[in-house]
Amino acid sequence: MADFKRIAKFEFVSEKNFLNSCEVKDKELIYKNLKLPKRATIGSAGYDFFTPFDIELSPGQTIKIPTGIRVHMEPNYVLKLYPRSGLGFKYRLQLNNTVGIIDSDYYYSDNEGHIFAKITNDSNENKTIYLRQGEAFMQGIFVEYGITIDDDVQEKRNGGFGSTTK
Image 1 (cartoon, rainbow, N blue to C red):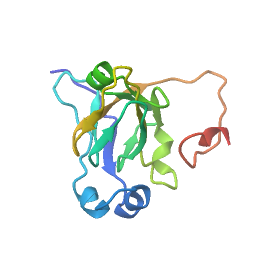
Image 2: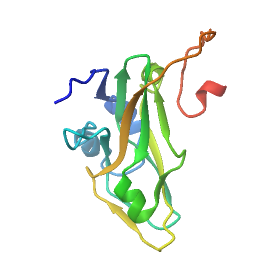
Image 3: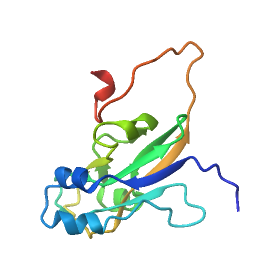
């Protein structure tokens, strides 16, 4: 087995944060049943993210999913999020931002670094997607990155989508 760098840790956001973000019934029960992302096999690069509740998506339909998850990672890493390949292949399931990018400083945002996913069933074969609570729908891969020699950024993040351009 390879000796991997251990650079991150998944955690749950607070129950209050999740309940404020979730727009379905039985939110308290859903929070208690959240699962932390995990790899499926020893050779998996991606950490599977699991649906917090049952989802039915007709062709063309979109849903915003509060995962209830945050991640603390080393500063020179990013978590990249992709749809599970099988769901993309069978249903053309898409993340609306193509690839989700979770920066290391997102963990410290006012929203606790709560990771959301907005997905669309882009089926052109009229297939409806049914995902049960706890089913893997998205995967995250940690990637190390570098910066330019003349980089002098001092700004700090506070927020999620589009917050670094405000």
